[in-house]
Image (tube, chains in turn red, orange, yellow):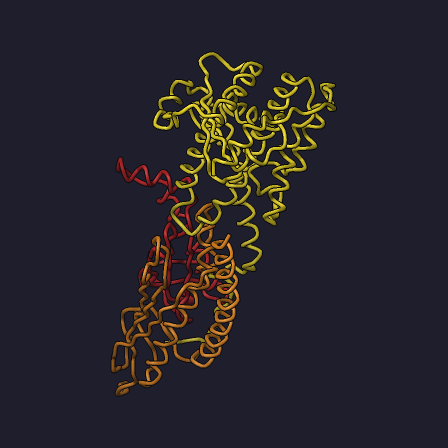
Length: 104
Length: 151
Length: 278
């Protein structure tokens, strides 16, 4: 499944459009990461725990978007965009959306 | 003891009313999605060639609130980590509803497509202790209304 | 543009899980974690608290040490009893007991930091014989001997600090109650140990254990008068009354102590002094 944030692929033509597909993932960190983040707030530096959390979330969101596209019979997702929002204390939502197509 | 009783009643109330509202909302969403299936929405930025369209901004937004039950489950999740399933359905509902409202607006204008659709999510009214109060989703795009047909 | 109508299947972005099942699993897990955490904290805090020397307790409790002053009939008698009890109880070096008498109606008695023991008139006037009074006094002195006051405070501090850190940030405050039940378990253990130590003191003074259980009978009767149900065992700070009576009964049997004997009466002058002290 080709995933890209461009809408024109060099050398390929779009045969069919299916419309929008999206994937989202809402994850919370556990108390361990929370305490570490609290400490880092005093000392500064990269919050590795959170970085990992968001990375996993992003991968899951992409996976879900792929599932939706596959269910439609598409083989590529164009013009993909990401959106992150904090929805609750300690939980972030990663949302990814794009347009599903069949590329030749 | 009183605290516990209040807490339990809020929890039960939140669960019953929340689940019922959610099911009802999903039914309405699915119905309208079926009706508006014919209007394509895409994230492309460039309009299709060979046709002239009348382009107008269309938007749809909705604010949905969290119930006590969902909030409690999310707090427990915060303890252990992992997927906050109670919020997944909340956001899914809000997104689909916002998109439907945008589509309805485009349909009313007689649009053929909606291009360059984007989403914005924001959490509104962080209640006590920084817990989420409600979430707002905005969906916006450009409706391509059939103008003069060239070529 | 060639468009095809498409439907997105449900259940991809929303995990299909029954909310009640998820609640049960998460709640159960959280409760177990908290109970284990509080148990471990309680054990270690208790162990460490015992290392605080008794002299520090005295400093902490010094504002309390001001005595009521005048030697009265009541204080005289209580002090004499106290001496007899302390003689047989084998307290460690440097540990002294300071007795306080309060003329309040409260049916209670307690031991606190620095070896201070408070006896309330409300309970004293209900005791039927001297043996029960000695049992009461020895029980409180046993708490001091076991360092129970400082251990309780240490445990309470440790547990509330950690639970506050872990749970404080969210709606989970209500789960703090599960920690409370674990602390109550520790309390009941301390009470049972104090009961045993006190029974031994009664035996050493009188040569038999008769009359000791009258302390618990008195409390039982008082509860019945108030129509106060004790409630489930795991919610109590003390073991259930009947359990305490049975426990000291068994303890006597284990040590082959005589259970029959005539309990010594309380001197009438003391009873009178209590009655007029309202």
